[in-house]
Image 1 (cartoon, one colour):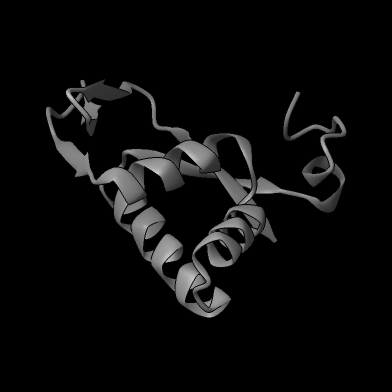
Image 2 (spheres, rainbow, N blue to C red):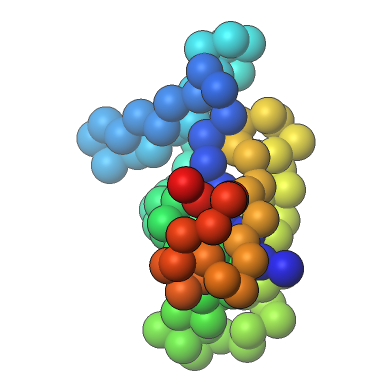
Amino acid sequence: MSYKISLSQNVTLNRTDGKSVLFSKKTGSFFGLNRSADEIVTALFTSDADRVVEEISTRFQVPRADVARDVGLLVDSLEKANLVIRVPVTNKNQKGEKDETNE
């Protein structure tokens, strides 16, 4: 099953001077994102991980398995820091149809 991500409660994504930072208002912790990580995180807010991996793999002509590993490691790190939450995506709502997980 694929997933999207959303920011954890009390977390903001701030962009200034070409830099992106996830900041937890609750703990004061932060996580700086380079340009690639910012692009991946932003894409995962609206598209499922399988689609994001495929688009990156195609655009940069990198093996899909390598991109999937790197995206997974990034999300794992952000999730471990309690900055994002994985939101499961079913086949039904991957196509943009409403169901109980995206209403």
